[in-house]
Amino acid sequence: CLSHTWKTDGRWKVVSLLFRNGAQHIFVWWWLGVLLAFMLYLSGVLPMTGTFSSQSWELNCPIGPWTIFFTMVTSVLALLVSPYMPALCAQPDMCFMDAACINYASEAMRERAAYGVGGILSVSKDFCVLWSGPYFQRLWCVFELATFSKASAGQVRLEPFFHELVSLGFMVCLYLTAWISWISVAFADAAIATVLPLLRLLPCLLLHHLLRRRCVEMEDAVGKLRSFSFDSLQCERDFDREFAELAIQRWFGSTNDFTEHVRVSLHQTLQEQLRLLKVPTGYLLVAVAGPVAMSMDIWLGMYKADASNDLLIRYLAGQLIGCDLLWTL
Image (cartoon, rainbow, N blue to C red):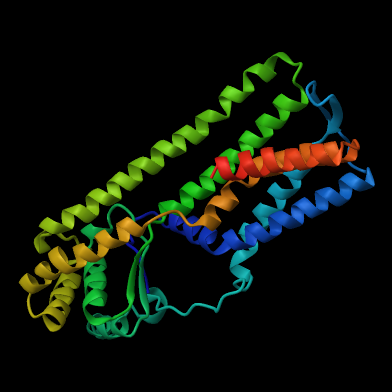
């Protein structure tokens, strides 16, 4: 099951799920962009608009921004078409979607769904919490999560949707950084080249601050479950609250038992998930695509200028792998 609250803006959830599903496709299509740039570099059809110079290496070679450009285009295309492409190296997921499986226009069908949701949760293999700020304030969200943790042997996964948003934001910012870095390298003699490196830090610092705030907010929300109060939960309508209370009495016995379960068992489960929580490595690899593409442009320029194999290997290991990948990650 994938659980979320309707109080969070749906547009952000769409972007989050789009990136979650599309990250692996972006990674594959990014390499297609690199391959396209490499072939066009070798064919000589691309104009080289800048120059990379190094006095220590005694090197002066023309370069272009084409790897940055082509990988950026293929990455955007991969993100947009990912919902229509099969999952790579994975079985298709099957999930219960309330908006598609419950007839909300019929009060009788809604009542049956309210009583039967516990049965659906009890046979689910896992419960993915697409967390956002209002999640633990919503009655149905907490009820579904608590019911799953009580009735099922499956795993609760706490996955805040801001992970995808921040990862996508870093990808955009680092591509912007790549363009700025390329301009400062290709036109090193221009006066603006000394100012550009400072500008590339600003968007990344802003995203770091946003990520830290969201992590603190999530830890605080989980910590407050120790003093959880059933009466503080919010619901759209009193009618829905009555349904929820009847379902709680059926699965937990009383609202007091439900409260105790949330304060002890559910809180402990989510605390364990917090300790395990981290941004997936695949997201990080996609996020640093911009700087890697920029270094690939310089490497391809060096290759086309007949730089020595020793120099090409050193640049590949030191700049592209050591700095762009390992240091940035």
